[in-house]
Length: 548
Image 1 (cartoon, rainbow, N blue to C red):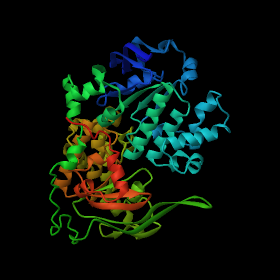
Image 2: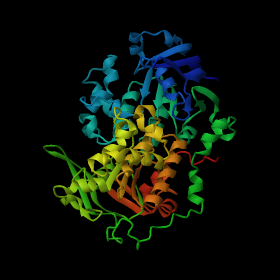
Image 3: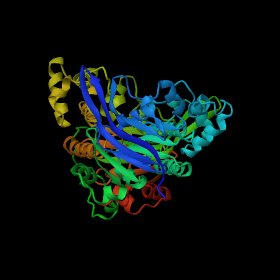
Image 4: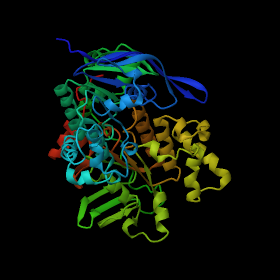
């Protein structure tokens, strides 16, 4: 028996009005969704996916214009809804899981209160009675220590935990339609699986539907009944998941699938890692060619939460990063990855243990030594939207570290900034643009150029491609490999996506609850993981059955 149609989108076209010009973002889009169905919308940045998601919730920005079409949820014509009518269905009939938790959570409201907001706003529960339901929703979303997390504020959580708070807030009202816009792009694979499993159960149990917007085709393969492929605002192909992955018809769909990693091949292929750097060469002129660039011994870090409570983020961690090496640090959110990277960068002080970076004891840096250390260690963050000042031109962003470290006279800075852009395969014409005029992948290239412009010894890459499309991910990783080879720089690569590491990283350290569970060359650890937690991480990787 065919399930009834829950959602119908017919001939929907949406323009943005920018500087007096109309830019078509969604062009004559039509599709339907049955009760209990999961449809994935895939496509690269700028394909119209997120604009479509906003339109389905009545959340388009003021400069958006719905040119034509209709959106029908059950029997309701949503395009005719007033803002007050929309408020009656958001959080109950329609729920939204956004991608970026840093801009979606109220920084002055406790996490637990934000989870239960939908229940309180729709008078389903009082603030007091919503507490237990909020705690359960947090558990369902993969949060541990829920009593503590309930009382904390967003700034006290990792990016992954903040995303789980958003997911808990979306599922607590048992909506009939869930719109998930890259809901797990910042989460590790085990929690990603747990979250998607839970949402999948909710869809089936409630006869609800889900629109999953994702750039990760492996997730789309694992989680979708059908797939819609968008390019430049249009639907270029749609069909069942088996049809799209088994027999793609459109060249663009075949291109996307061509950039999807086959992890099964990774485990069986004859992988040969890049040659290790020559330990006898001292390319940085330090006089300490044999010494590693980073050496941690017995690192321990505690954070004070309240007068009577503390949290141990890192427990007795020892590791080394050799010169010219890429070390991958992997583990779930809250495992201590970012804390370790911030200690190495000199942004946090260790509670105990030894931290030697480029010959310096980071825990004992004196006045004036921090400046040299911060030049030696640069960071590239996950979200290029947050790490680049939107009011600066690209030229000013690149010249800023040259000024700060007094590395070049004013008349030379533009030329150096231009060289830095060309190094990351961006045209010099971008110097006069601002970050908002660039795509996500282009912004991340600018962030990489800014990090490298001071000639660091170590670059900490904190989830640098998790927010990017598969094709752009591959381009950025290839770029980083080329730069490492040409500049003889070392990388600390923090990621939750284990499929990125073969062929990119040399070695891997697996963390859980602040402790090292496994370490070794990437190929050895992937093919013969010794620790049960490592095996769990590998088995949770989506899309193991992809063949392209």
